[in-house]
Image: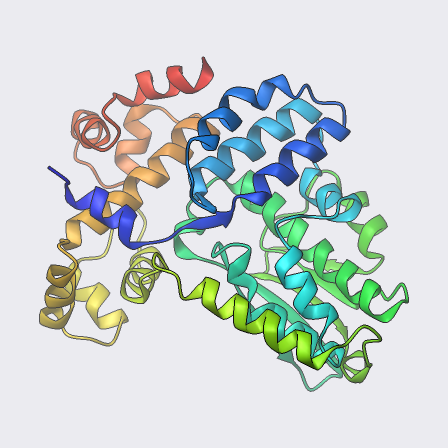
Length: 349
C-alpha cells in the first residue's frame, strides 16, 4: 500500500537534470578524485531511465565530491572551469537570442530544464542595474546548507560566464549577494567575481549594468531559436512537473514555523489566502493529508540535523516539535524504514 508520503514524493518533482551528476563526477575526477568513489552510485542510476534525479541524490553526489576533492569552493570552481552538460539546452537558447535582455529572459523562463531547485527571476532596478535572482524552492531550502551553497555558487558563476561569452568581453558584476554568512574561502569569491559581496541576503542575486541588456548577440538565429524554444516547452510540459499547491503549501509551512512550533492547517491556509475547507479538498484530490506534507518536511529537516549538524536525538525531537525523542524515532522509522542512528550508520558505510 502506498502511503501519503510516497504519493507526496510522486506529486512534487524536486529534480535536477541528470547530466548535472555527470558534471559533478567529471569535474571531481579532473580535480584528482578517484572515479571509483562514485562507481556504485553511478551504476545504481544507470538502471533508472529517467532524465532527472531527485534532490537527495544530488546532495549525496555533491557531498562526496567536496570530500573527495577537498575543495570547499567546489561550486564556484565547477561554474568557473567547466562546460556544464546540464546547462547546454539553456545555453543554446541564449546563444540564438537577439539581445542580452532576450537571452537572460529566456534563461529565466527555461531554467527548469536544469533544475527546479531555484526559482529564477530577471529584475531591473532604478539605479541602472539588472539582476538575476535565485530563490530556493521550499523543498530545496530544507536540504544541506553546504550543498545549497555550492549549487548557488555554480549558478552565479555560470550567469557571469554566460554574459562574458555572449558579449565577447570580460564584464564583471556590480555586486553579488548571497544568503549565507561570510564564507571561509571568501578570497575565491573576490577573485572570480571581482566585485563587492553582500552576505545574509534573503536570496542569491548577481547584478550587472543595465546598459548591457541592449547589446546584440552575434550568434542570434531567430528561426533556430523558435525551434529550440518549442523543444524546451515540450520538455517542460512532460508529466511530473511540480504541483503548485504543494509548493505554495510547503513555503507557507516553512515561513510560519515559530521556534519549535509548526503552523496549524488554519494558519497555512490563511497564508495561502484560501479557506481550510478548500485546502482540505485540494489535498483530498491528491490523496494527501495535511499531516503527510508536514511530516515530510520535518523528516527532511531531521536528516539535515542528523547528517550535517550532528545534533542529538533529544535536540532534534525538540526542534521538530515532538513531545519526546521516542516519538521522533517512530516517525523517522515509518518514513525511512530504519531508526535514525541505523540510517546514519548506513550512510557512513
